[in-house]
Structures are given as C-alpha cells and as structure tokens.
Length: 150
Image 1 (cartoon, rainbow, N blue to C red):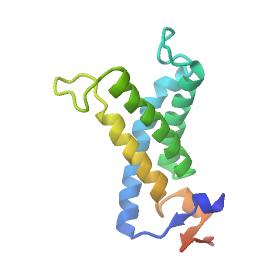
Image 2: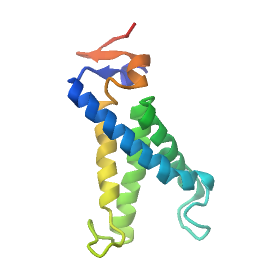
Image 3: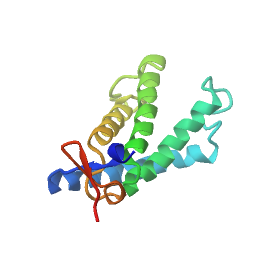
Image 4: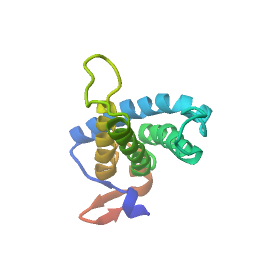
C-alpha cells in the first residue's frame, strides 16, 4: 500500500502546480458533488435509466474525491474515482446524448468532462506532489524504493 501512495520527488515548481490543480479541481468536485451527495441514489431523477448504485458511486467519487484532492490524502484513489466518473460522463455526453466537444451556442458538451478526466489521469500517474498528506504519511519514492519521511 505504501508503494502505491508514496510520492516521487519532483521539482518544487511541478509540486506547486500540482497543488494548485488539486485545490481548484478538488473544490470544483466538492461543489459539483454536493448536490449529488444530498440525494445519492436519485440525483439524476427518478426516471433515469442509470441504476441507483452507479448514481451513488458517482456522487461519492465526486464529493469524496474532491476532498481527497484538496487534502492530498489518498489522492490517487480519489483521482481514480473521479476519472472513472468523468469517463462515463464523456461517454454519455458524446455517444448517448450526441453532444459536441464544444457547444458554441452554450449548450451541453463533453469538453469539461474530458478536461477533468485528463486532470484525474495526471494525478493518478503523478501523485499529489510534496505538498500533500500522502507524502507525509506514505513517504517519498526514489527509483522504486520507498523512503519514509521522519
């Protein structure tokens, strides 16, 4: 477990950018997930064809994943949940609803879900950076060796 959540040493500039990405995207997901977590089994409406369990998983992924990003605790897990939710959102908007990538008239599109999916993939692969609880708890990874911080 320590190996999965430990952090690679990166330049401090990269860690600062990762921190900003985590804070802004984490806040966005807490806010997007807030309404969903209020009614996790039916936030898409009672007539939705999406099963209640999947609606609940999306609500928890967005709301809880947002807090994981903000705190930098279990960031890769939170980003993975967000990534899965955004992959479904891209699919739904693109292939089910037929939305364009960018809607110049202001309607629905799959651009925001695509951007959030890529940000989630970035955080899954890079980790949260040095300014995170993950680093404090799980240590630093150098050349596939985990070195706990003291």
